[in-house]
Length: 288
Image (cartoon, rainbow, N blue to C red; front, side, top):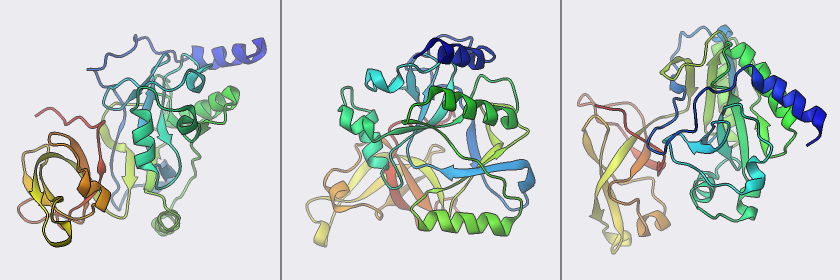
């Protein structure tokens, strides 16, 4: 990296360097969390972007971490030249390739070839003191100066009416996207879940912990038929759909966390039409 380029990066980074040392593995990074979209939000206040189906990644200025506080071990070249500026983003390899990304980033010595397919999609700067309108411009400038093909600034656009938003959602979903994210332009970076950041998907999803297996019957005889799972608030239910044959052969381990999709809740609070979506090794339940 030339002297001029280094000086520009330093100037951009110097305004919002993180005052904290690298995080310990048992201390998840304090990240902004997304609430759920609801009709009635003032869309004119928000920026809209794709919701990427990857692994949340946090660069603390020295090292990459998962949302759950696990250190990642990418090849040296992947983060070489990255600034001391904390960056919030998604490790992503394209639509519908979550399992590939998850498997790659959690290997201690994943191949260069596998990491070459991954992009770090930067969507915020946690230590920047400004509102998102300012942070958006700052992360775009930072990524331009980095000039690395595997570090990408997440595109944002303004959509001011519900009909256009739903049209964008439908188009993206048909193309294989997971949904949309809406980020309030006048919000500071706050490590809370609320309306500053909301997600819009064609279905609801949530997390649950695997308790045990139910043996399969018929064509699934000899392998997993369903999971008994428990939500973070202690509700238990049986989850039997959404699994591939390979996942039934090698189901999520007992004690691990998974994400399931559903459509509304029963009066009991249990999910309606729940089906398995993916494993969530980076998930940590909220304190009870």
